[in-house]
Length: 478
Image (tube, rainbow, N blue to C red; front, top):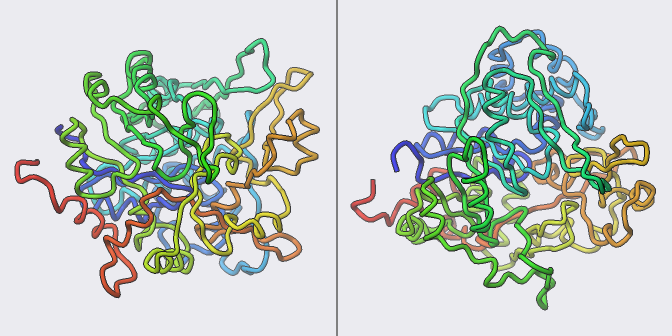
């Protein structure tokens, strides 16, 4: 299908899909995608680490409002931070986060997209999670300031996004209805973002990116195509072997002998029906092999979205020593991925790579003191006085119970937020010197990265992944 890439690099974790990876994929002519999840704290910590490459400074210089960029830079930049000391915290996202958080979120998303688009002309996308609703509008606005080409979103039903993109492109006040627990009357709560209330931009209109909804069923695909106004621009059909958060099985949760969710016939996707919807679509979830690309094309797809293969390439954001440890374990045959039904505070199944010294080990999990200081996966709930509170089943149990949470909801929960910052070499250091443990997520295809590592080879590039994926295309493919 014209004007659409054959390969989409998945948006992974917190800054695993960073601007460096997205740019590298873009330079191959395919779509690089940055992870927009938690990018505000990512930028604040990068600045505190001193911007050693100078690229952040370049992006800040390109931001349309120098005064706003300067406020963010001056707040967080440290040329000589002591790495044994805690990172400076940033405001937690809530439904009325204040100007400082809005500015940080806008600048952070602009910087990530601007750097991802540097030095090539291929499309760049941003991936967000519908579950994390409050940052959506500021994140999208910042990305649109940098002329992001595509928005990708799953982990929920993102039916409001197409209309929000239309509104933001017109620089209008935009409202987003958020999901609220303990709300028996279904009272409507909205997060409001008004660009003109934050600053005078001197801009009348922004480029409106295309929207690709990440779905896992025919029912959801139909909703996104027929019930969105305007309709989605395309679909990414994600199967449960994908990394990160997975859609839960339809019906009651049943676990196998390894305590992993069992997916059955109700979870199968009829690709012929997807094709009949008449919108471009891509297949994802263990599609990172050349044969799977051909299979997708034969099913009528534009191509594939690939995450895991890119997650462990040279350009990804995973901390280099950790990345090499995982690669070595894979090559030695000592790696597995577990679909954990209880780890994520979201309640969605979550893929956890079994890596020594990380939260995948019971001893490491039990040793960690519970704290919720990043707050992305907190759920809004309606308090008795009608205002909103925020709780997370991974926070200290007593705090969660005081907020009306149930004890059984806390069992086995991991701090996905802090764990994923550890993955990229930005773990928080606690006042007692304790370092937040790492949590690594990956798709089931992790063991197949050996395709890029023949013989004694111990690393590979994003370009290697693309070349491998395209290596068995039929000669008639365009």
